[in-house]
Length: 99
Image (cartoon, rainbow, N blue to C red):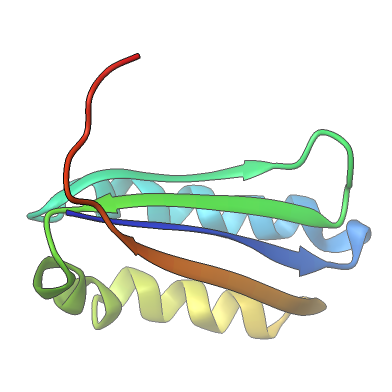
């Protein structure tokens, strides 16, 4: 299993448009084979930050996602915004348990 966690930085004035584009990509991504979680959330303290959390069966399951039409549409939407940076990290998870 892999987990991807990170942040997107943007001009605060673009956050609502970013979240609209993110919301449009979340539903079809959650329907993809091997996807267990895919969620964008606005930072409650910084209006210029949106967090991303993803959980996949494997990197092989992630591959088709990166080529999906809804991801291409999301990428085009981001080009219209003032996204100033992003930081995403892939974690390989050996096991998990509920707390």
